[in-house]
Image 1 (spheres, rainbow, N blue to C red):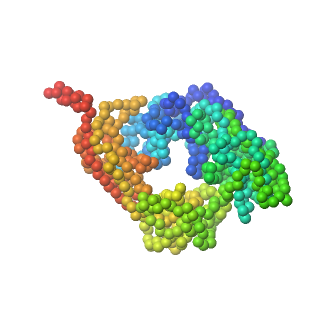
Image 2: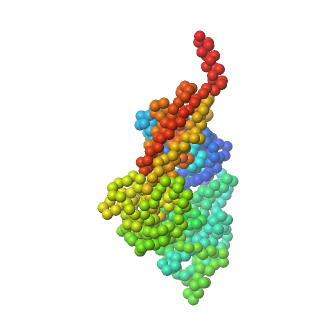
Image 3: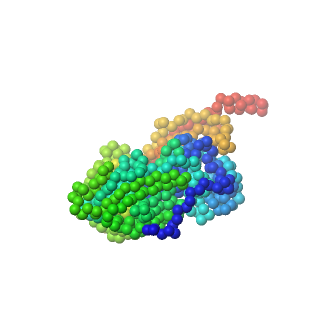
Length: 601
């Protein structure tokens, strides 16, 4: 065998009855739909757990997955948002993220810590037995804190703190759908004319035998767009296992059984971005140390043996469903073939180069080199964008360009695993004033818009910046303050009767939702402050929706209140606004209050 027989594939078996009895499903819903699974690619990192669908709604009961205790409670404007950590007696840790409302006793602990620190961010570590819980106890209500939309992010971590696949540890879901191979790509990296040939449109699943493909002897690499589905909602997931066989022998394998936190960003080494999306690269970077990866030596350099090869691509999910395609790859088999014949294959579409990042700016001078980092040589090019940013963006963002755009890429075309400090070439600087300027920062081009990337650092001879990924960047100045839009804020609020959902007390006053946004450098959420009639109150930032959520104290008396809000952006510009709230009692509560006063007399 081309690969070591020591790396065997585990048999797919359902979770045992004992395992299923030891844990409880973490979400109180009649359906169990996944919108994300373990180790699927997520913006340069592996996903560490499951995303459980909540039908675009919040407020479902989140339950303890096992007996144990709450070992940590963390609330943040970013990352996991409101999160709980439950530790079981065997050391397993269950993590719940993006919650909307914590159980009353936990919420009181968090509020006390927030007031002690004077801000929203809080991180509490609790001793064993301090807050005991039992399987199926309600811990919180599901939400969307620090997330783009409502769902529950759920993780299983071993006693070592490293993530495990929940589907293999008692939280399997029904799944009768096989993975889908949506496209197969074969690329050559010849320096003179790098090209790629693709079969499949990225939407229709492939199966069976594909047409032959003939290529010359240049370095050859294979990638594939593969997704998995687990239910009729058909959300895109990642496959559990992918293997490539050449002439009936396995030459490549990925098995997503385990992950360590230090490997999270190795996802960048396994996927290549194409117009179709994130395609799995069927080779193995030498820096990739994620378990379950193996590849034959010739794949690393793309040096396929000349001749005819029968390739078979197989994708499996954890439930035992499988998809596969096969085709013949003819490498240098006809040395007398014309250029038109090379790459010829019925149904194969020729694309541009996808392995080496193409230049996205028009060159104004020869590329320069920064030196050598752990990722290899880094190079850059300055110039004008081929696809300019719309004028509307500049008007709305308050940003002003200082110099030319600059594109950074690794000379090898491989990903960066760690941030590196790089200089800003002279054409990218423009008339930069001497000294530190917080309004000046580097921005990254994303979908024809500039997104804040990092502050600049003043060094001898110019400016430098610390970046964690290649791309097109530009030095911009933020000249505009944040916007606190109070016009649409509801100002007449009526207190509701005391009510609980799944045993968790809800706020008696409606949330005050205040739009707070900055489309330039972005809000520095730790600077946001709210005062009601001069008294400080902790409010919850909601960055994905550009707003601030103000929960009024339940015992706040009816009447008129002045609310003052201040916020700053990363450039240091400050904004403030004031609104006046009118608080009322509900009619029934007014009657009860009057009757109580009458009886007291």
